[in-house]
Length: 169
Image (cartoon, rainbow, N blue to C red; front, side):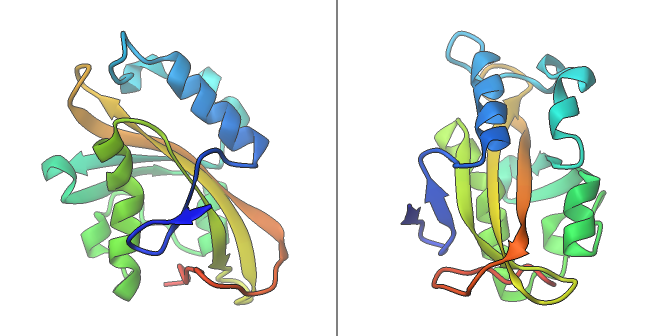
């Protein structure tokens, strides 16, 4: 695991099997080395990940992002639902740059970005493991207009360690 410039933990491949499967599905949908589009993903295909999917609109080339869809398991864990809001409108405080980087980095690398680390659970302020992947989607093969990904949180509290992220808002 390595930390990027914003302190988020980027990993080559997630240890969470459903995160890996989602990344594999995204890669299988690439068009001649280009990016898949939103229309390449059928609702039925996303069923194994329901509740954990997050789709973002890319605004101004990645200067901001709008939460188009946030899975119910994510909103329950975080105890808030930002659907329809831009990241710039949300209460992330000092963590805003880290959140923006989560969605911007897949656009920069033109591929999936896996992250694993720990966040504070809003319900009881215990630290929980998270695993995610975020991937760019394009209108054409080169211009990202969305990101799509999945985000899973651990059920059990873990001990606090370095590189942690307070997303409790």
